[in-house]
Image (cartoon, rainbow over all chains, first blue to last red; front, side):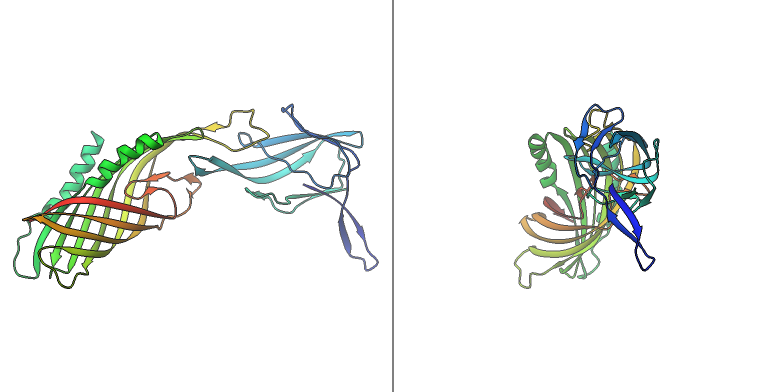
Length: 124
Length: 219
């Protein structure tokens, strides 16, 4: 998930550029482990979705504004091997937030596999 | 009990071929082979791998012109493999049909160097008793999943090379090495996980090597 801002240039075209977050706190709802704790200058975050549920929630605080992002997704378990177990591939259906911190969300790639990819662009 | 049913099924395919009588020099006899290598090898491998895999195979090949050997192979295999990440059970039968070509030009006795091809299919029942999912951040939640019994089939081709030597009268022994190419690729079919082990093929992977050491009798 990457944070973006956009503007309109002199030609009237929309220009997108990454936006650094000044202060970010991030943790999964229902998980005590904090992923980002007052991190500065954050442009993107890596999130993992739940593989035993189709709804994953993350609580984030950006510049003192608290918000909860809810990601609705489908899970598809792929058998890898008996040594590695199985790996879950996801398809993002939709995303909501409680505090409406963001202007819009672009789905760059709704499919989430084993490689780290940019899936969502959050616009400020 | 189930494995004996598969063996009986295999024999019903193989035995009628033996009943054919030699009519002229084109037909040079039918050889029934029992795979001793797999039967002996797997129990040893099981100790190393902490698994319970067994494979039994019989074959019948018809000699034509002492060069061409149409062959049918059938068998039964079962596998129970466990690890910290998963536990899997599979059993089923397999059939391979193809032919060998005896590449030896000058021979004394009934000795052969074979090259051959097989087309093969296996039908198996299988289940994952449990599989662990890989997920670091949410690992504190229950990440085990279980799957019910399923029925599946697979197809593959084999390129074989082997040796057969006449030991005494009609008794012969030999071995095959096999390169196997799986046609039913992909670990899922219509969203359902396929079997991790394929009878007659081995652990599911796109290509595999195998070998047989057999003893046979030519009628």
